[in-house]
Image (cartoon, rainbow, N blue to C red):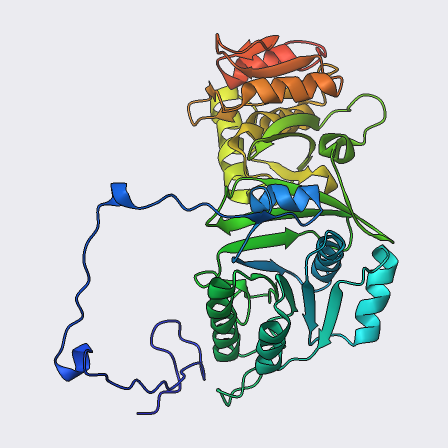
Length: 436
């Protein structure tokens, strides 16, 4: 029966016919296979070798290196630096004595070689295979017994088993499934590069997430020199780690002191700026939150946020008006996380509120103050995890004061139970008392 539209996802021309032949022991022939249940306590712990990519930030996100026999998907927008990251990792692994194959169907051998020479000295052990044919890649892997394979990219790879064009959902899924089935028995570590379209679904990492072992998202844009590496899925490690890179002419460079790069401030902070001590996984960061308020001249005030959730910003503005008596109904509010960073930590709530209040009242914060705390609907400040590491990172960067929730286990200098108390205590005095 022909079907043009998938009844589940609604996409057209994604249905692929697959002939299933029955066997004497299959359910289709009336038989049944016998599978014994085992005690979970008797199942051996899975332990395997990890291969270092030679890039510390990359290894951190992978959980200490790539698990031998795993398939890692590197996803991100075109031109973000995925190929640069993988050519650097491939060169490092080949220099460490591993047999590495770099299969490319997007670029010519000369283009890949030029990129490799730009980022370093290509080792002899790194082999280049310019093809988009899946069978050619599989045959070369079996013939030469490689340990690591990089596929750049999965959108260009195709197999003759399907009649659809390269890059279609069926081709991407089939090629990825074949690589997964090949990697497990051979103990082969495979890195697959995948582009993300505007929809984030067609021929992108969303199609492959359930097939691979690890999904790593490479984030950033051409207007900022920083690139962020996050693990979205990781069967062999944590998904809470973050790697930070800086794009240079000679390739990607690891950023160890990420807080210093994201702040990059000269002198004190003016009105409308606050420093947030946040956590990404086990790693503390200090980022600058900038806010601008302006009297609206239209029917509806604007609320715009870059690097911060717009819905949460609207909630915090309501808390400021209702619990702290700061009128926001006639104000356009713009919030920006400096440096192109995107915040998901609720510990940034306090910094966002103080930055908005500082801009609205034209009163800067006290010098050398960082903020960390979640703000509730009642205007209360709630403690967040990892305060000891946030406090240590703040001190290392010269912020002698860390303002947070009132918690007896926190050694911070400024501790507040409510947002109104924090605003009164942290904003520099200017004229008469404004807080109702």
